[in-house]
Each structure stands twice: as structure tokens, then as C-alpha cells.
Image 1: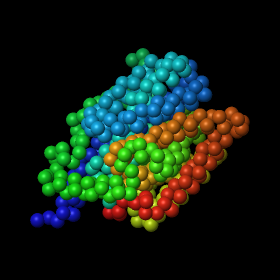
Image 2: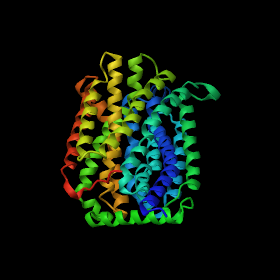
Image 3: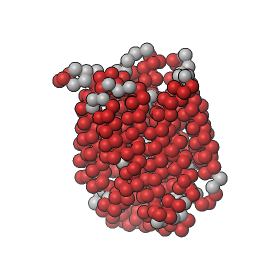
Image 4: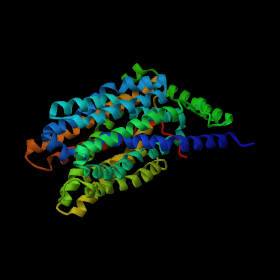
Length: 433
């Protein structure tokens, strides 16, 4: 008869194989619909009559409305389950994304971006919360690292896909950017409908686990939930007042400023390096930094499991990435592309390490609300990043000023996350595998 540990390992393995590939697919589609505006930038601005400042404002508005509905959305998911709520999120955001076809001028652009933020709100923190329902702390860091494959995969696959769709300019009376929003938005609707039938809310509902496997997994998760409730808040209002929530949220805000400083402008930077307009070739080259990020998101979280101070490792990764982001405008195309690779890799790979801290501290409704609150402030970082980049370039009349300002925020994030390494036993980390 297998031991309890063996049965638990079997249950975790089954859950990983069953859930992670589909969650990865959902994340890829989410990132496509969030970042495809960067690929559409040149064509979209020209044909829709959108100025550079209006583009930056509209790109950021998504994160403003996204932030407003994050916490309510995650609390609803905690109550009704992931099947229903993830389906609702993906179907509505896919419909809104398709409606971008009809944008004409800045006002309609602002409206669509606001609606897209409301529709997608709660997706990412919902998945992070959902992972805590299924995976014990000893494997959660690794699981989150594997889930984060979705970000680089979105750009490895999405760059060429978006570039290819842009080349359909004029087909069936649609412009290239319209084809991109149509196809990628429709994909979100299809995946969302499938999520309703595929996802399982909790281990107790899993017909694909044996009774011993269900029992072992539920016992392990219940024991961890009890431990978290002993050292951290389990009520949402108490979590909001907790100083560590404020610390976590500040760090994530700065990380997301760094991430979206790269995401929104990477296609344009690559196009400038190549001296070409954005299309299939630029899309293919834009995938290179995300291939590097895919390797980093495998290696860095795994390394974090083996060091005593994972927060210090995360701080070092952020600092190196921030410094690399100041080199995007080097005259040497090869060096500039290498800098893009380092920055993209670090900004993506540091995030799974970060999420092991709040998910090991909060429990119950506090976890649902706190994860959403942290991600809410991160979403506001996505709003601030493109606008502060444009402001810095105009204010200092210097093309690299925006990159330097965003790099400074990356270094500040590195300093704040390093302080987590000194937090002591109040911030337990998951046990290594």
C-alpha cells in the first residue's frame, strides 16, 4: 500500500498534468489580448487617427478599469468557483477585444480599452488564487514558475501570429490590425467556453482523482491553510490593514511598471533596430527576448527554491534587468537586442518568486482579496508606465529619458523586494521540492 506522501505526490502530479496546460493556454490568450495593442501601434495609430499621447493614454486606461474591478472579481471567484467565473471573464473580454475593430478616433479607443479592463479584471489573481486551492506550498513556487511560461509563450507565439495577421491588410475589407483583434479576440471566447467544461473548482470535485488522492491533497491543503491563518490575517478587512500587504503591493506595482515598459514598446524598439515596419519579420525577432524569458522562468524560480534568501535573488534579478533596460537604444543592434533579452527575462522570471510570499502569508477570503489588491496596484503600474515614459521623453527632450526613468523604478523595486528577505519568520516560504 503506497505511503501518504506517495499518494499526495501522485495527486499533485495528476493535478499538474490536468490543469496547468489549460491554465497556460488561458494565460497565453490573456497576454495576447492585453499586449497586441503594441503590435498594432503603427497601423492602428495611422488608420484610426490616434496620436502618440492618445495611444499611451488609451493603452494605460485598460489597467485603470482593470484595477477597479480586481478585488470584487476575485471575491466572486472565491464564492462561485473558477469554472463559472473564468468562463465569464474570457468570453466578455474576447467580445470586447473583437469590438476594437470599430474604433475610430481617441474617444472610442478609450471606451474600448476601459471596457476591456473591466471584462478581464480578476483573471490573473483568480488563477493565482486557484493554484492555492490545488497545490501545496512545497510545490507552489515551481507551479507558479511553470504557469508563468504563459507570458513568454504569448510573445514567442503571439509575436509571429500578430505580425502575420497584420500582413492580411485589405483582406475581406479589413485592415491588418482589425484582423489581429478579430482572430485573437475570438480565440478568447472559444477558450472561455471550454473553461466552463474543463476546469474543476476544488479537489473534492475532481472525478479524475482517486478517493485516496483527493483525501491526501485536501488534508495537505487544509493543514497549510490552518498554518497560514495562525501567522497571517484570514479576514479581508484585516488583510487590507496589514503592512505587509502594502509592502507586497508596492513591490508588484514597480515590477509591473518595468514589465509593461518593455511589453508595450518592445515591437517598436525591434522595428527601429531592424529599420523595418512591424510585420512578420519584426514579430519573429520580437520573439527572441521571450525565448530567453522562457528559459529564465524555468531556471530562476528553481534556483530560488535552493537559496536561503530568495528575496535577495529576486532583488538581484530585478536590478540587472533594470540596468539592461537602459541599453535598448544602443547603436549596436546586437547589443540592444541582448539588452532586451536580459530585461524581458528578468522581469518575467522574478514574478513567480514574488508570488510565493503573499500566497504563503494570507489565507481564506484574505488571500482572495489580498492577491487581487496586490495585482490591482500592479495593474496601475501598467497604466503609469507608458504615460510616464512619454512624459519623461517630452519633459527632458531626450529619447532615452523614459527608459532611464523606468529603470530607476526597477532599481527601487529591487531595493524593496530585498527587504522581504529580512522579514524573518513572519514571511514563511514554501518548502523546497
